[in-house]
Length: 159
Length: 158
Image 1 (tube, rainbow over the protein chains, first blue to last red):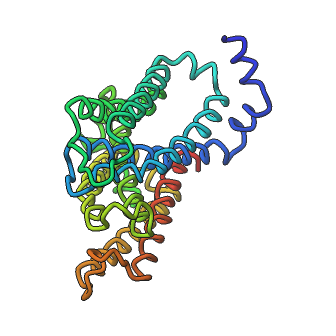
Image 2: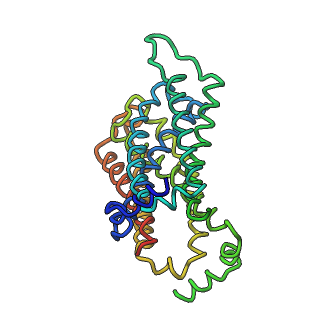
C-alpha cells in the first residue's frame, strides 16, 4: 500500500495540488463550504427526527437532502485531491483513519434513516412520529458527523 | 496598534492558549463546529427564501435562526481566542481584515433582512411570497458568507 501511495505522491496531479500556490487553499475552502452544506442540511433532518422544530413537516425535510448530496460530492472531490497531495502522511495518520470511519458510519446512518423514516408517504395517511430506533439513528448521525469535523481538524495535531 | 497587538499576545489568556496543550486545537475545532451551524443554517435559510425546498414552510425555516446564533456565538468566542493568541500576525493579515469586512457586510445585510421581515405590512413570510428585494438580500447573504469562509481559509496562505 505504501509503495502505491509513494508513487501517488509523485504523480503530476499530486505535485500540482501540493505546489501550486492557490490550488491547496482553494480545495480547502471547497471542503469547508461542502462541510457546511452537508452537515447543515443533514443536521436539520436529524434534529427534526429527534423532535426539534415539530412545525416542519417530517417527511418534507427530505427536500433538503439534495443539498447534503451536493456537499458530500464537493467534499469527496476536494477531499480526494487533498489526500492525493500527501497520501502517505494521510494514510499513516490514525486521526485520518478515524475520520474516514466516522464518515462511513455517518453514511450508513443516513441510508438507514432513509429506509426507516423517509419512505414514500401514503396519500391521506398521517405519517407516524419517528420511532425510538429512528431517533437513535438521528442522534448517532449527529455524533458521527460532528466527530468527523473534530477528527478532520485534529489531523494536523496528532499522529 | 502594534503595541496593542503585542499587549494582547502577552495577556494571561494568550499565554494560557500558547502553553496549554490542545488549547489552540480545541478553539480551532470549535470554530469549525460553529461554522457548520452558522453557515450551514444561513445557507439553508437563504436557499429556502430563494425557492429551494418549497414544501418546508418559510416561517419555520426562518425559525432555524437560533441555531445560527449559537454558531455565531461559538465563533465570536473561539475566533477572539485564536486572534488573541496570534494578534501580531493576524492583526496585519490582509485576508483577516477582508474577512472582517465581509462579516460586517453580511451582518448589515442580515439586519436589513430582519427589518424587512418585521416591517412587512403584508405577511409575505406566512404567504411564502418574499418580495424581490428580500430575495436579493438572501442572494447577497449566500455570497457574502462564501467570501467569509474563503478569506478565513486564505489567512494561512498570505
